[in-house]
Amino acid sequence: MTQVIDFLESFNSVTVIIRLLLAGFLGGVIGLEREKYKRPAGFRTHILVCLGASMTSLIAQYIVINLELSSDAARIPAQVISGLGFLGVGTILTKGRDHIVGLTTAAGIWAVGTIGIATGFGFYVGACTCTVIVLIATSVLYTLENDKRERRKNVEIYIELRDENKVNSFLKILEKDFKAKNFMVVASRSGRMDHIGIEAIFPINNGEGGYELLDDLVALDDVIYAIESAPKKLS
Image (cartoon, rainbow, N blue to C red; front, side):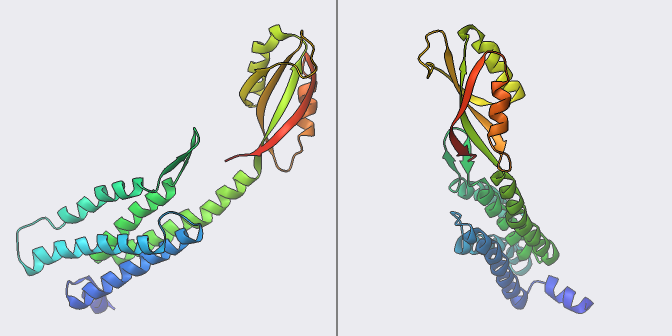
């Protein structure tokens, strides 16, 4: 067993092939998971990134060991880490004012690059362990996080007040006690000139109906009535 480990950690033609094949395999495993969720960088991209990063480590070792040139073996692979940052930027998109997608894919590409570097240097345990952890983070934890998000949704509610002078204080109550957002003061739907309307977004659980929330709102002072306008899911 010790002899096998020593052989795998040595630098020769056979281990070069083994490391490149392992890099392609580990990158492909992560890429398949990304492909499953229709992400911008998928199967082929992750394989190429992992292979390229692994090759830089192998080139660095070849220069030092075979060519016997005085060089830092970590210098070439170090450039991969910064270079992958530019590649990852291409997968990040901004949707709306505060919704960004692609960050996980960008981070995954960066992680795959480090896995490739590790395989190139023969750090098999680190590369394989990191691959497993990346898969857990992108697949298992994503499912848990997505389930939690799906249990939450937003509802848009219209509230009519009988006193327009109480709007500011009422908005503070909605924000503090009901976690409401996106307030909009509008004309009263009843047509009463002395009334004022407020439209706001309220978070609720899927397991809960909006009826409890409406009852709580109607129970507030100066509220004439409250009605749900258009439920919206969280992005």
